[in-house]
Figure 1 (cartoon, helix red, strand yellow):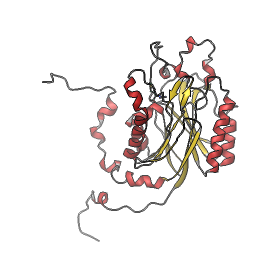
Figure 2: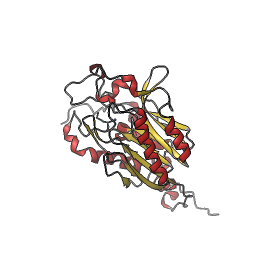
Figure 3: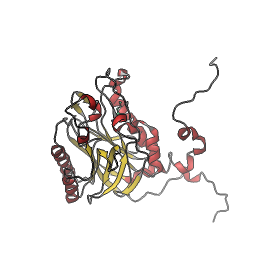
Figure 4: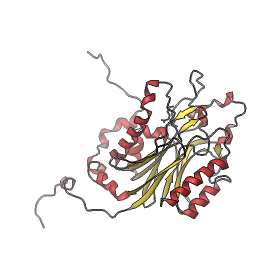
Length: 332
Ligand code: CDT
């Protein structure tokens, strides 16, 4: 045995043992537009078709988009749309009578999935929710969108509304679950633009993060960002994956939905930040990748070894305040 004093940093510079491989075939089940009057059973049939394609390609898990059972209804100020029944967009049970078939098919095929939908709870709360379903057809996780973008009041100057802050309450936790042979977390659309999302999930051990999105290509408050929508979409998810040593699946509802052009470009990102697979169309499309969850250790145990390198005592501002507080005084 060596008499040398222990060097706490030695492990950071030595090679790590190769961990046991944990392969998983994952898929993104991108959806094209869902019309305002498309019946639920028709949408569910589209999801089942993607699930069956995934099974044929040996997938264990398919990520589906945000609000994957309906059109993106927050684009309308419902009070101005007499023939629109707001409650018809929400699910009061999951599975419910019309979604049961998706769960049954998942169990038969042995393919799990994540699914975004509008949730109305028994006590009247409304959330932009995503669930995680194991290959047995059992719900193992539920996430309620934390970062709600857009506005609360009708803004008639916009080409279309983004009233998520009117129709949903924000969720309050980023949870992770042990399933699919690893640790899985979920986030929803606008959440993917915030580094806090990935970091909270990674602090919960996330090795795979499933993100559904509906992103209009036109951003009314600053249209100069329109041409960058695709770039920003990949930028945030690739950075989130790399900085947290996690796989990320980002899956869109794309195409022209009720006159609003929405970004597609669903993708599967490795912990290196590299894109492993990307959709080529704006319609219903499945992409797959066989990943190895053990490879997250390449980043989690080296550059992004949180335990060794993070400095939470310096990060108080991140949880202590929301807005920026620049220094006072003159700038001269
Ligand atoms: N669904 C969603 O969160 N979409 C937003 C659009 C922002 S514009 C109000 C997104 O971040 O992609």
